[in-house]
Amino acid sequence: MMNAIVKKVITPQVASQLRSSFVRSYSTVAPKEIYQQQQQQRCTWLNKEERRKKKVTVREAINSALEEEIERDERVFLMGEEVAQYNGAYKISKGLWDKFGSKRIVDTPITEIGFAGIGAGAAMSGLRPIVEFMTWNFSLQAIDHIINSSAKTHYMSGGTVFNPIVFRGPNGPPTSVGAQHSQCFAAWYGQIPGLKVIAPWSAEDHRGLLKAAIRDDNPVVCLESEILYNYKFTLSPESQDKDFLLPIGKAKVERQGSDVTIVAFSRIVTQCLEAAEILAKEGINCEVINLRSIRPLDTETLVKSIQKTNRMVTVEEGWAQHGVGSEIAAQMVENAFDYLDAPIERVCGADVPMPYAKNLEDNAMVQTQNIVNAVKRVVARK
Image 1 (cartoon, helix red, strand yellow):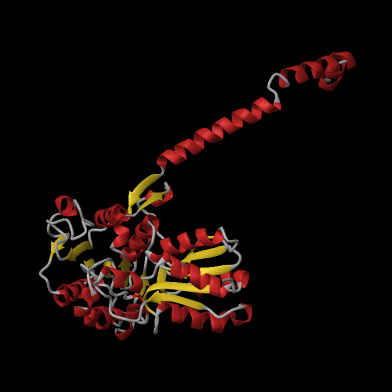
Image 2 (cartoon, rainbow, N blue to C red):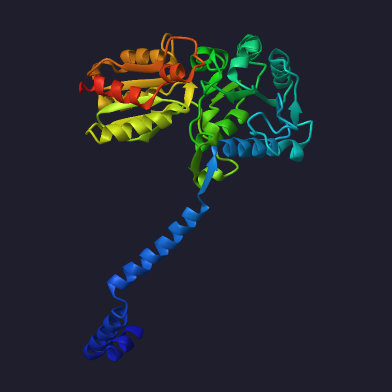
């Protein structure tokens, strides 16, 4: 019955009028205008995202990570020399003592072996201490607790005792502080089973890796850079989140390339990117990998890169012998030998105690030009 009525009402003439009316009403908004509206909406969204991005120093990134983790978990506390009322030797802990008080932000005497031992014991008892060394050079006073009291505890207890502790502070050479304050400890601690060792570069690295380290049930060595503390990086909205974590043991490709792979960690990533820009002008396309983690080492990412570029240069601030670059070279020979078209080059600090004189110090430290020269050797260009 209904179909019959419809057939009578919608005659061919009526149907034609309806089609014409539909086309006229739809065509009032042209495809170009629709596209412009969509682009305007997209730009509005992008502008909101851009506004949510934030430029911060590495110092501020570490400070925010510490504050959020101490606030999140009542078991977390920070201890070290001058971390409380003085706001930290490098102002990393600025404002934390005012907010959390002396039970959570603990000033210690100048005795690394003492407060590292207290931290290891507190971790075994269920707390989550963050132990700050004014410099990793001073960790030599506490190395027994880092290795014997922390790294080996879980294994020696048959998996029954955990040691969730973070040891952190500036590592590697700053400037003008002489031989006893300028060592890189990545290779020292990267050898030890039971430790995780991270070496962040950007503000995002420092936030994500430090927060992950604090939440980890294993002892973690966090190697920072005094020179990086003042560097500014852009934090994405995602990395500003209180639960933003980066996986320990995963490297990041900071720059895609096809001719050679440059591998580095911590501050020296900046100089690798500078070298890559210089080399790009000469037609050499470099891939730059930021290790982020020394132990575990992300061999998978390195192998994938060598399969693409067939050449590699490793860069570190420490000494060459038994260094991080040596381990990477060995891993590549074991896992990617057939893809190598040239020997792996290592760029390292000079094999001497760090000189104090500025001209000698400059020659002992890795410079951007050293990286440029190494890459040219690897790709056989003068």
